[in-house]
Amino acid sequence: MTLLKTFHDLGLPQPLVSSLEAAGFSTPTKIQVEAIPSLLKGRDMLGIAQTGSGKTAAFGLPILAALMALPGRPRPMSARALILAPTRELAVQIDEAIRSFAGSAKRISTVLVLGGVSRHSQIQKIAKGVDVMIATPGRLQDLVDDGKVWLSETRFLVLDEADRMLDMGFIGPVKALAKAIGHKRQTMLFSATMAPNIADLAKDLLNDPLRVEAAPQGSTVVKIDQRVILAGAKAKRGVLNELLADEALEKVIIFARTKHGADRVTKNLGIDGHEAAAIHGNKTQNARQAALKGFASGAKRILVATDIAARGIDVPGITHVINYELPDDAENYVHRIGRTGRNGASGIAITLCDGTERSKLRDIERLIRRTLPVSGDLNLANTTGVKAAPAGADRGPRPGPRTPRNPKTQAPRRAERQMGAFAGHADEPARSQPHHQPSDAPRGKPAHAGKPAGGKDKPGKQRWTRSQKNAAKARREGGRRERVA
Ligand code: AMP
Image 1 (cartoon, helix red, strand yellow):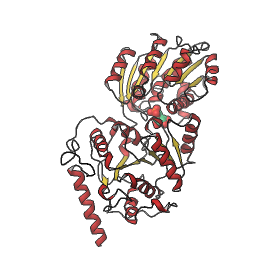
Image 2 (cartoon, helix red, strand yellow; image 1 turned 180 degrees about the vertical axis):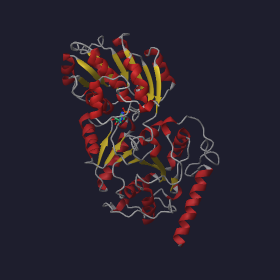
Image 3 (cartoon, protein in one colour; image 1 turned 180 degrees about the horizontal axis):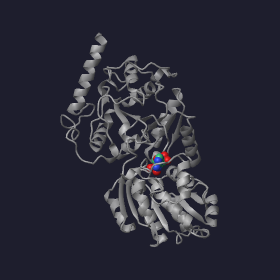
Image 4 (cartoon, protein in one colour; image 1 turned 90 degrees about the vertical axis):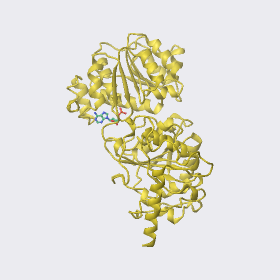
């Protein structure tokens, strides 16, 4: 059984194996087992994998092994290996990982080349020559154009989260940078999906690549308990307060659709007594790093983020993901909820969905091929809180200390009771549906989630699939019974 292999079995040099042991990595993940031996032999690679699979070590370790075997020092103004990443946060994370793998065995120099911060110190570091450059494409292209970096000495090229780089419009710089490196290179391309534009790019840049597909590590995503609360746009703030009143929500990432939305949610959270850090594209790089650090260290319980800023973030111990707004692109839902339930831990993802977002919810259900358990009644939820029969009527409210709330946004008591049942502990089993592993779910139309039940949508009127209606009815009846009793 391949997964029982050790890092030593994969052919890595002892100093790297030792630093992996020191970092607590004893067993390689699937992608590491499959990729490392071939990469050590110099083969190109196409990895269909996302954050959580262990891909950074899969490409980073063979590159480090090769660099450690090279004589001399890197030439001035050049980098021996180039790793391109779509966002600054992911680049910072990769840099940290590479430096921890390299340990103290042999000094490996790295440089981060990122937009949004001063070019000066980056240029100074590059001037001396570096082993590994981790860069976002836009800034690196600028430095290359200005003659501050020579890529002709680069022998290793990694494109991490290539799908996101293309989504962000980096196709031009990515191709230009690969061209500047030339053909004498080993190339590794990683993408969460195998969309046609990725296939084209892979064909362009890779030479007879090894192809490896890997979901996030084993049991991680399977353990995410996913729920939807129907709440009108105006009711969401109250519902969020109700959820956050539960201490079980220890480390929470809240997703908004836009930068403006993220700022609004953060501001309202502050008014309502919940201190939160925010991370999005309008923040300076320093502010983004400070927000991430505060959240990762536990100093801040809540991080509010947009999709792009949060891509690739790997903060351990996130207990809950709350989708305050649904993403425009259903695939981002999968990336969002993947922030929790990492490294074998369980996690809960709660999505607040208003009337205008129903089609987005259907797109998500189609993508992940399951109907998400829904609570709340949208027709009653547009002004205050969610007024519907209690979901999970089999369980009572979760007692717990309440944080101070703004009287303006206080939701009705009934909503509080209902939300108490939602803010479950991460270690509780899912109630109503089998867990699902969205990351490798094939696309396609499930039997249950293709069209909205009852024909075309009418504005202001809620339409759900038959199974969602039945589930809502069962919850209402359960709630009635509970009230009578
Ligand atoms: P990545 O997919 O590279 O973003 O890695 C996701 C997380 O898995 C990071 O927190 C890594 O530290 C961790 N990780 C990577 N490889 C291993 C391994 N072999 N054993 C345990 N944890 C790992």
